[in-house]
Length: 191
Image (cartoon, rainbow, N blue to C red; front, side, top):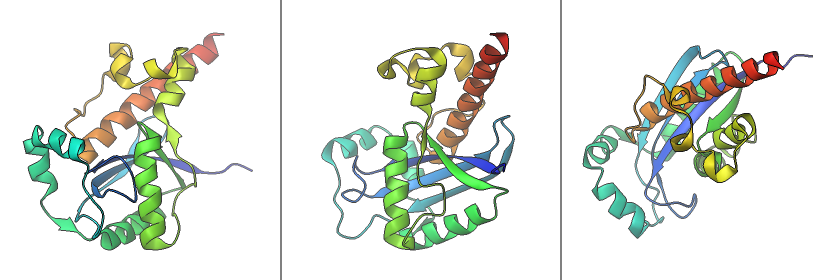
């Protein structure tokens, strides 16, 4: 029995590193297949969660990202509305959504926490696919050398710049992930 999956690359921005202690400021999602065809995109800017704090070092970093910070303050919605709209968007995709992130341990943890906090569960596959882990296997490098900044240039040849706006970053990660899939398929067929 073939399960129809749709990959959903998610990128989030936050005011700290720990879901449940810090707030997600925005997230972007790109639904695509392994060939790189994009089916749909979703993005929301969020108000911080009442009662959650800010991480000092993260906020110092944001002070150096004024353009992105300014854009993340526009058109914000409550986390509840954002997660409800995201669940509705996921439900319309042509297959079971599987979240993909770079790194999944960060982006997925926020999406997972927000999904349970505001929806009582998740509308996507319960685990997230980590792009650096996949790169580690395809490139044969240690995990600490598997982030995109260490990849060969041709694998990072993507049309979307890394701007710290979640939709831009999600597009770039999705395109780079597809480049990795193509490399893996080429290696597999060549052996």
